[in-house]
Amino acid sequence: MTNDSQKHIDDFDRNNQSNTFLTGELFRYLGFTRDTLRHYEAMGLIKPGHDQSNNYRQYGFDEIYKLLIIEFYKKRGFALAEINQLIDEDQLEGITDNLIEKQAAIELAIKKQQQMLIKLADTQAFCQSLPHHLNQFSIRNFPLYEIISSFSAISAFDEYQEKVLAHLNLADEDLLTNMIRCVTFDTTQYQETQMHLVVPATARESGKDYLDDGPCLHIVVESGRYSDATNQVIDKTRLAAYQWAAENQLQLKGCVYLHVRLILFHDNLEQAFVEAWAPIDQNNRTE
Image 1 (cartoon, rainbow, N blue to C red):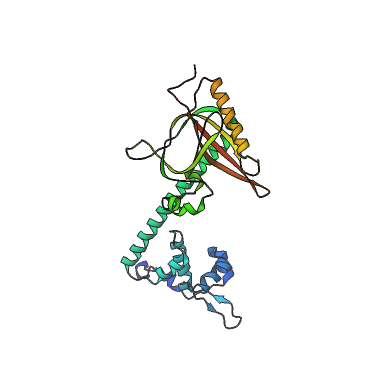
Image 2 (cartoon, one colour; image 1 turned 90 degrees about the horizontal axis):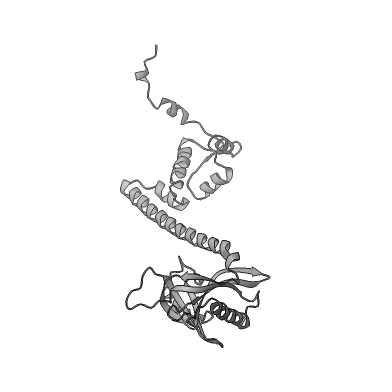
């Protein structure tokens, strides 16, 4: 009867360490494709031997174990170049620092992805509600926006560096989402226009400027060269707004906020869907 205590616990692994495997066998046994192995080899991550008779690559125990280590770190978010450095790291402190840095980077990436999901959900909700608001007036509450800076027009690109880029983190935000055009008007015509760089706010603070929030006459209109929505089209919207407000015993304050929410393209011409918010004068209701 064999005394099991006299066996070395790693005897089976020791006996297998002299075995070598071909590229096809590694794919069959471990799932590593030929392209993956060649890529790892080109980066210096593994160094397979070669059969002298046919020059076929042969992978021994050490190289296969490196493959397992590579997969270990890949599943923790490390790039191959980073793994190449980690394999040579022989200090626990160094490995720990790398893990902490990678965790922080992944947490930041998750935060950015979560912000992107919020933007996607907002745009999707706008698309779903579009048939109900396109060229249809209703009363809705305009959110509170703080004015960060103001500039003359969306096409005034020479003003962007000072008025826009200095206040906006383009790594996380897009320009259209954070720009709202304010147009003042009366019953006869539009008077002036200005662009505002804004951020959502939860409450007004002293010393800061805000757009006029609260009840507004709301509508979505098409703009852009595709729909030929020039000032004539916008002016028709203004006249329709006054008519709708009068029919519903409402008085407008004489300004409208225009916010681009979606842009499509047809034959290289843009089709923009713009939310228009005209604040209602609560103190001067039409009797």
